[in-house]
Image (cartoon, rainbow, N blue to C red; front, side):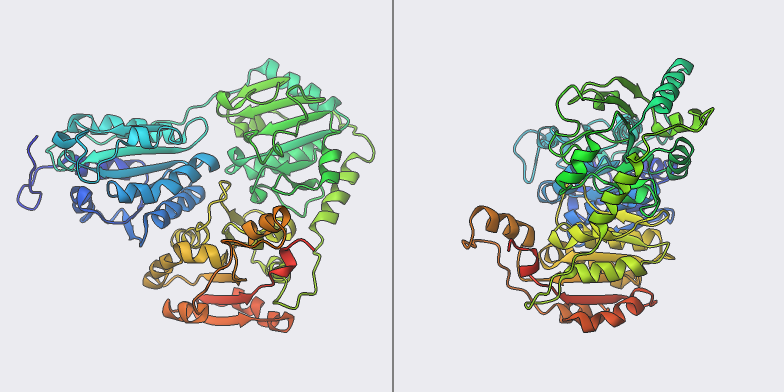
Length: 547
């Protein structure tokens, strides 16, 4: 296969076909760390103003930005990385996309076709590398098949349970001439419930005395339909792991979320339901509390599971009724009850009372810094109605999930996979996508130093992000588990930190510091300012450790 020099050859190349296909699918932004293995693609992007090329400082940051962008646009996020080290660095985003059910296309430069499987410099077999976590991997060895592979990539990334697709692009294929046309978008697959299915669900929901709805990410584009459904049928609702933004947390029918630390009293109450309707959620580890909710493979109540992906139904629990269709389509057709459903008198009241108890802040009087829950409470009460909150992984975020009363159109961008380093790149992507909205990022000192350098993009683009850095000199989550399992034997969890105030100023932020409760007064003003704000919080470590 001959390599052409695009600078002196006006022919369209396979790389140009990739760009045309991205544009045809509505992709207007790609995130990258450049590499010599895909120079042909970078050159094909040069003249295309339809696509904003965001140059990142690390492939993990580029991948996380693409995932956050996908969650906001409901289109596949796209990242471009070089072979070998670049793809390895991006692997965390591939895993997060799989765990979070986010459509993601990773374009990886590859060695020339003649060198494939010869242990060439930086060569990796990506089918083997990503085979366990990607929905599909492809390696384009024939430029004539580029359009076909891209068409399939977009279909696979968004269909069923959304997830990651990897396309390896040998450098000589990218620069090979191509006379093919771009891959065009295909209509979304739609499967609708049969009339008999709808009637059965109406009967079961209407007759249930202690019903419960569990809503997941499959309803992110149908939050209005979801609210109408639970109100018309008088159904209490919980959200799946880290999907709080699906429903108004202040609504009387909202009774909580299935998180990392669902209290025993709440879980025992949920187990007494007589009907569980799961809409757009996978019944995976955390959402089912370690596969204990429902209790046992055969639940003690009727389990109805509606999900785009039939393979997600009946995997861990026996379903009384399963429907492989988009839950939004079901909600479009379910209709309204012919008579107000009668429920057990105190069912919803008991659930909401338990939720209020859990969501009530509990402040500790710490002497080694401020209890970060006080910061979270302040932010939660002042969060603008259009805000997008990005959360990194760590103990600092636990109170955010518990006490912040999210309400659409507010958005929560947090990794179900629990990946550290997500918060800052997600905030940058949100700022690029929604510059008119308030973007707040909460991140710990451990997570910030993993991908905080992506604030260089925020500085370059003039994004007025609000970054709250919780500093306690520790990998707090691991330290918490360490103290429980090996009390007093601290090993590997302490951190030596740089001067975070200087770091914030280096990226062009207005910097402030919270050392005590008295410093909280100015935090609300900073959330509502039009400038980039960087707030360093001296956070108590003792407040999160076992007493």
